[in-house]
Image: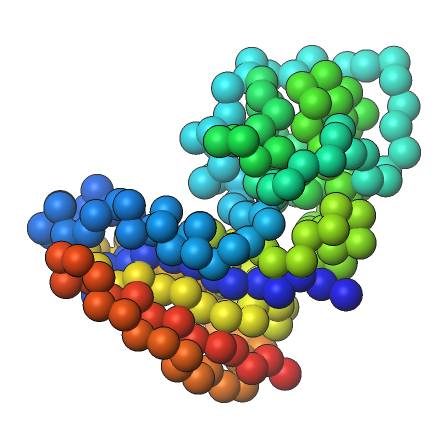
Length: 228
């Protein structure tokens, strides 16, 4: 089994997600995103490595260790809520075990070094594996459910991570806040950014479940997604 996965994002009317490039720059109250995040009731949220790096506090981990670790899930401790980080190659040194009270889980591939695993253990950071050299997101979803008991997961970007889950047919809902703002730059990150020029999307249908007007003119759209 996998968790019920909701992609929750905020974007300008042209689908861009970098708030400091929007015009006007005060187009949305940032509290909208956090309020809806809580209302969606996830027991975990997930972001990619680039997004996650802003939360890391640690100095780089040592590059060598005499310890050997099996490539199986390691749980530092059980928690009521989790922050799941995609870090396929093990690049982030955390220096912390939680983000705003949510225990960190790092999703790795089996090529990650024993030295990096030793660093994660020293920081009290849980980790799991999905794939040998690239992340297998279908397997990861199953591991998060079976090993950590995650039943409702909020996928919150960036665009590459969101697109990878979309292409894998794993997203069940889209929760999208559209702000009354425009970015306009072709290089700005967007809600979904495939690494392929011709992505193979699993989406067969989308149904609007609700539409709510927020203070300041933003709109919250919620869609259910049918995948192949």
